[in-house]
Image 1 (cartoon, rainbow, N blue to C red):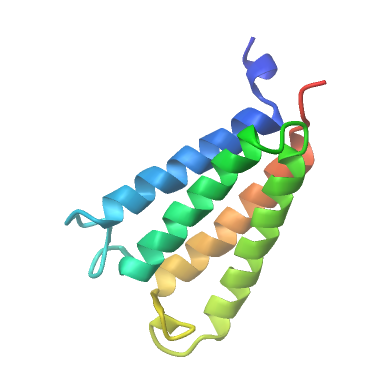
Image 2: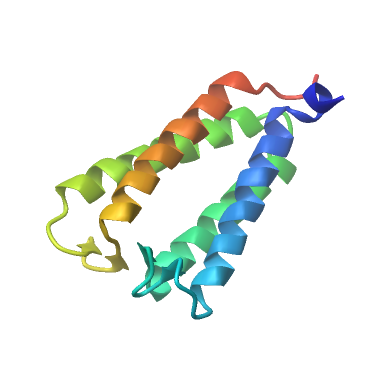
Length: 125
């Protein structure tokens, strides 16, 4: 039964809703996701999470049967963000998005998991 739920559409939705929840968390004071939290965020960073979540959800609903491509594209984008983060001096990615060391490693881990998910989980036939 669980395996029947594991296809690219549900994976895209899971990533999407997770990013949207993380974006919402960034707007309320908490020790995990905040300007001074374990993962540093600012308004721009929260908006990136919100847009990423929306892109995953849109990929699941708008691009039916092509969710796998959406997952791989967003994973590749996150990989580029992760690499850019490691080359960024200081705590502002592109001078806009607040990041810290934990963010850099999380973005790399996310990129790997997202890309692997895109390669493993196939669309429903």
